[in-house]
Each structure stands twice: as C-alpha cells, then as structure tokens.
Image (cartoon, rainbow, N blue to C red; front, side, top):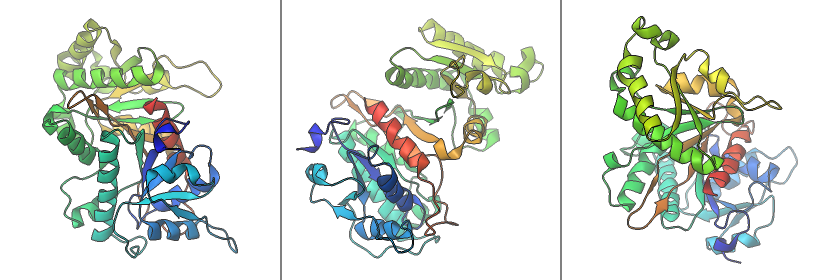
Length: 360
C-alpha cells in the first residue's frame, strides 16, 4: 500500500518534531499513544534519537516506552501498527540537546525538518504538515533568517512558485471548536501594527480569509470585522481608522461578493461569533482582528490546549496548481517543563484533525 492510497486523507501528513529541547517531541509521542485513530496516516519528520527520548519521558514508571519505527520511506507507513511512532529520519543522526536550553543545533535541526516537509508537500507528496513548536532564539543561534514557521513556509512556497515573497501574502488564523480569528498583522509592535493598517491590507486579509474558510466550510463564510478603537471608533469620536480604512475595506469586500460585516465593536464581536458547545452557531464564522493580541486573547482564553494555528494563503497556480496546508498547536516550546512528561498533546491532536479537514 503506497502513501498516496492511504484511506484517511489520500496522502500522509507529516508532523515536524519542533525544537528538540522543548515539549514538541513529547506531545508528538503522547498523541501517537493516546489518539492512534487521529494519528493514522501521520509520520514524524525528525530524528529518531529525539523521539525515542521523548517516548521515554512520557512513559509511566515501570512502563516500556512507546516504540519508534524508523521508516525507510514514506511508502512503509501503512505497515506501522497503532500506538507506534512512525518516523522518517530527515536530519543527520545526533545526540539530542539538553532539555530546556537554547541550542543552535536544535534550531538548525528543527528548521531542516520544516523545510523538508514543506518541499515534500509542495511537490504533492503530503496532504499537509503539522508543525511542533520552534524556539525563535534557537533559530537565530543557528543563523536562520526567518523568525518562525510562517515566514519560513512563505519563503519556501514562494520559491516553489517562482514568486517574490511579497507577492505571496499570508495570514495567521487561530481556531478552536468555539472561535476562529484571523489577524491583519502578526508580530509587530502595537504602534507599528496600527500604523500599518490600511484599506488594502484589510481587503487582502478578507479575501484570504474568505478563500480559506470557503474550502473548510463548503459555503461562503460570514466574516465579522473588528474595529480597532473602543466602540469601533464611535463615529470618529475615539479614532478615525474605522472611517478611513476599515469601513471602506468592508464595503469593497462586499462589492466583491464577500459576506463581510463591520467594523464591529471589538469588546463584543468575539462573543457574538462564539460557537458554544451544544448551542446554535454564532452570528459569524470568523472574526478578522486588527492586531495580534486583539485576536489571540479571546481564542486562548477559551483554552490554549485546544487552539490551532493555521497559515492561510499558501497556494498558487505556477508552475502548476499547488497548496500548502500547515497547522500547528497553539503553544510554544515550554522549556520549563520539557522532559517532565507533563506536556499536553490536545492542541497537537486538534492540529492534526484540522489539517486533515483543510486538506480535504
């Protein structure tokens, strides 16, 4: 049975190991142990010694560690039994770094795993990739020019499509079962995020959001647009960004056929969009937030352990139609608990589920 005929998604999903000094490998081992049906058709792009150490860390006292099966090729994935970590060695074998310490070697290996998986996905060999957390300081120590996954994947995708990075705009979506938010700006100081807001950047965000959610929901998404200022500016009393940038962008989006609404008061819009368990869906399918914390705080308040980070916009038509599906758990490397076996795998499991849905 080849990887391409796997019944779950048609193609396998690669999970990149993340920074070996953090909790990423432990969450992966726990996910394979605790959610074998969800992880069916998944393999780790990483290092066998790192995953074996992680499997030992999450094993109970007196228990044998979860086995790690090293694949000769992805085609062997179908032969790996449940509750066994399937791994493809995509970096040179090495001794895992000390837990909880910034390591250039760990940063380099983590980036190599992401590049390998991204290129395999762009070649059409993977349904999606799920990325365990990176550590920005370790990446910098390794000489990486990219601060994180989003920028690295954007550059890989642009290179594959023969495009300039500037011509492949991407956005971050944070999602859980109750709320989805998309950010206009990501890792910018607040002053810069406000200064960078424009009708063009918001309209682009709305178009990217519409395209991504259309595929996920099977229908046009109802998009709420948060205001920037208190009370969405109160008609210019508390700021003019809503009048000068946000409202015109929403109008332009609606003229293009998008189901966009706003600007809406940011202190209530997230509650209006929330899908409470067991209740009717919220007024909106997604909220477009103007800056990082405005969008992330509501999602993380509902539970970091269930949050999933999704990169939107990684698709193109040259040299042939391509799409890169990437999700990630909504937490960091947690150096303070790495190696203790206490890491929670729920967000990683949720990321695999969503990656499968997005891959279609």
